Image 1 (cartoon, one colour):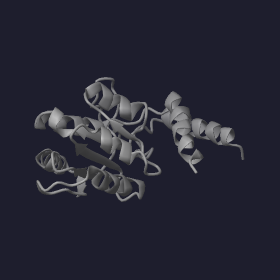
Image 2: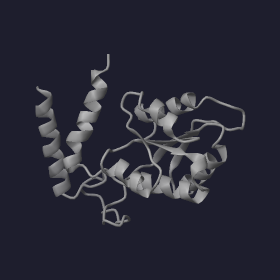
Image 3: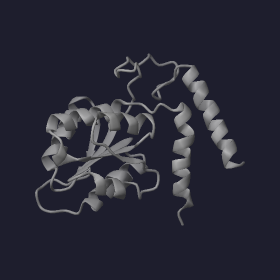
Image 4: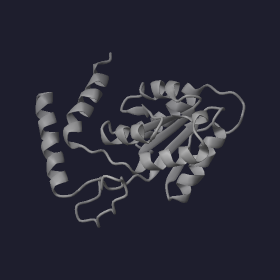
Length: 194
């Protein structure tokens, strides 16, 4: 079957699901999830999150982890845990692999600026990592790009802001619809690599 035919089938199925009200991945017969975002969108149903950081962001990571656990998320910590210098690519790859394997539904990685971790995570097949720096990029990365790993520059934000960014990113559902073909093209580019 040609790849374009698959894209048409996926689009048709997504349109049917959206038309029936199955937004956010909940079963069709499940009780509706209450709206939480300004646009009236529903909360995404994510429970398992991988988190990691380099040595510059341990306290930020621990703060986000505690906050998310208090909200009911199951958080898998990929390190690091102390002030001894580590190489962020090792931790970022561990977070990305937990998401790619299905062990966790989403991942969050913090380093000095978030740039390097984003680059590393995007080298892992199946990962769509987004470096976000404010609420607008948080929402866009989920609604438009279906990002499954969030990278943040820990020292660039206060602890409360980091927690709010992580919560909003986890709760924001992928909008689907017109964005599906673009995400499919993004993932098709990954398959071109030799």
